[in-house]
View: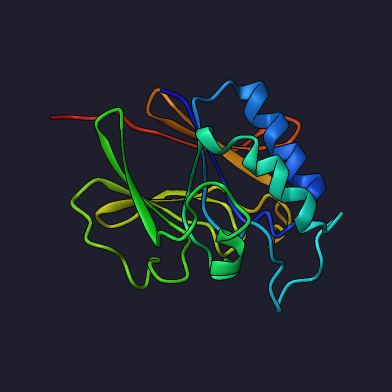
Length: 184
């Protein structure tokens, strides 16, 4: 199964459209959004084409294709206009025999990990910095930011398929990749 991961749209109509175009092009079965959908947050500059009211229908049209976790900029008032659940602090996915714990990163993060077994995968957004690396006993993944990337990174999303996690820019160029095989 092919999954797409994205994070930190922050109300950008432009980048929300780019994300959905990439989702269609990738032909993924699900889009997992790691929080911060509509509001830009007090520490961020406004992203390109900041228009949260226009992002709402773009996401609502895909409600049956989305898994979403709550970011630190997401609030109950956002849930009132979105037709899919966004208020969970995490979700757990089983992908090709791997347990993947998905969270935004403001509650659970490398300094405050959820309970993980050896070899589990922790994926977060929040930092706007892409990552795909092996840590002491787990894998740390971050698709970067769709709209406000940091540390010189381009706007990115990620694809999980065939036990490979690829972080891509919106031209489809692979920026970072990690691959592993499940062992019983």
